[in-house]
Length: 341
Image (cartoon, rainbow, N blue to C red):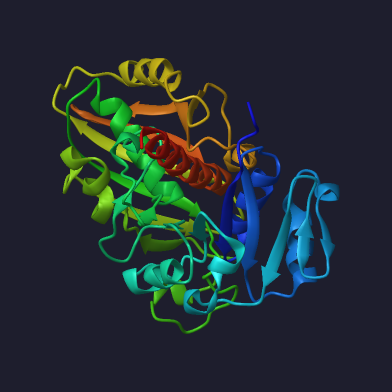
């Protein structure tokens, strides 16, 4: 049987998520990153990549190309979807990892310029074709989908937790706070921005923040539409995030051990996506873990007659892995359609 042609993807934005996607693809056998759009100097982009991957010696730079043992990637000094000629590179999908271009107009620019599909690494700013969370609603995807989101790292972790527990227990409502590592859009020093609290230094403060997961959760899990409130605390650490969730159960007899046992059993059904941990870990222990949810069995507490508090860990690498999973899901669907026709 002839070797399957790798999926050709383009990346817009070579920040942390873009670099993680690139490195994961370089270790795969089914995805090639053929072009990266970013206005950073190629030498600096290469330097940043090598500073954080496990095997920096695998990645070299040759002029405007990043090179690894599997493929060669053209670096283009462009940062706007309307300017990027994806058709020149024959991309099957573009992953927009900027976190900036979240509206349909920008996504349409990617499509107009040659992308077959565009996948956001974050939640969208308006209604799009689909939000896909592997492990939950991948069966709902359609070949006609063109504008897609894979949610966010936090949204995925929360949705997986709710999906798993709701299959065994009736949940009335809940609240989630993500204790989140600081992000690239926060100021290192106090600097006047659009938001009062986020104008304060992310390097020295715990900063209360909003989170959009609640706005979109109903698109992923319709039964939870309007039932979960979400917020964030940005804290001065580089990586490793904590999902602090309080859930109200209809059955007051549900215990913390019932929840832990359900997660132990169910995690086996989500290989590579969900896992449980018995050890007393902290945030730095999660760095390099590609699961979307690492459920902390020691963090489960009965906190009232029908309220149970849970903790779950995750880091951005898991989200980068899920973005590639979504690209693969659509590629598989396209092949099935071609075979059927």
